[in-house]
Image 1: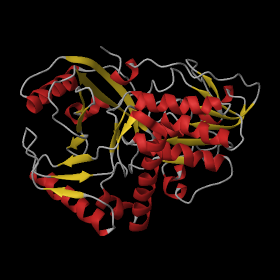
Image 2: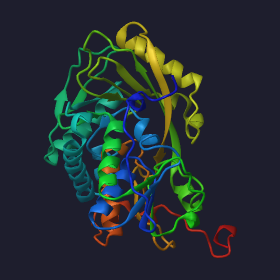
Image 3: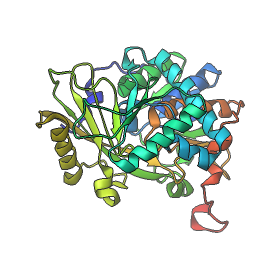
Image 4: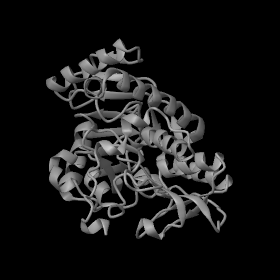
Amino acid sequence: MNTPFWLTEASAPAESRTLDQVDVAVIGAGITGCACALALARAGLRVRVHDARGIAEGASGRNGGFALRGGAARYDVARETYGEDSARELWQRTESALDRLESLAGDAFRRTGSLRLAADPEELVEIRAEYEALRDDGFVAEWRDEVPHLRPHFYGAIFHPGDGSLQPARFVRHLATLAAKEGVEFRERQRVPSLDALDAEQTVIATDGSGRGLLPELDDALWPARGQVIATAPLAERLFDCPHYARNGFDYWQQLRDGRIVLGGFRDFSILTEMTDDETMTAPIQEALDAFLVELLGELPEVTHRWAGIFGLTQDLLPLVGRVPAHDGVWIAAGYSGHGQVLGLLCGELIAGAVAGRPDPLLDLFSPARLLVMPRSGDPETL
């Protein structure tokens, strides 16, 4: 019951070689870590990936399986916050990353589109502003005044035709297999106690909201948050053709090929307890998920899987991607604020390019220096 549905699928282990020496050590065998390792290996570098658990067993295998364009901030808000050019560039780059994900994922990905729903009149105004901003900048989006297939009532929606549904664990395991074929070594179920324990010239931290304790300043800039998800037994009726999400992403659900419903969210029902790196499920959130299932379906179907996962939030809802200031050879790619599928692939490739000496201009937007408060000389952690 506590195992994520995505991780119940049988898979062959990534058969990797043992390397005596590596150029880059990557911490985290999720989407970001595996994408980074694959790109580095293809650039001719020797790479070892470390994970305290197994491949895809962290946040990359514990989410709702959405593959969406854009970032965590609404597009109109992103234009106001990051600037019009930066917001447009980020959205365009996630579109390209989603195309790349599709080419890599095979049957782990379905291009279904997605529905961003308005749960109340206030949210309707918000997503209408987002829709207008997207259309003004030339991005494809469709407005829906009515969503009659849904109960409870929703006030309207944006349909994003390019988005999709992902079996995330299958996708990440495929990335790991490709990386292993390129010579990457994987060390699973071996926690990295400190960065000093790694024998590599360059280190990439790719743990999203996990990995606390590796660097104190990262602990202050990356806030762990718990997402709880459930999956039902397969339903006979096809009710939802694509991923749905409402209340600014606090509620999200989709129906898989086999008919089961995957539903997550409601973190705001107990927001203080959900700002944690503890993967334990809680009664208030699980009860809210069950209650919403009844609203959606008219009854509570059999729930076969319940799980929790930890993701990373940042203050401005942009990831931290780039070199960690004051730490030679240490890089970070994390903090996707709940949008880690497509951003994780994009940022894994971006950080690999930077490590290999090919920095991308988009990294200026993601620079870790904007949020990190560095320890002062003489503080205990610098001694």
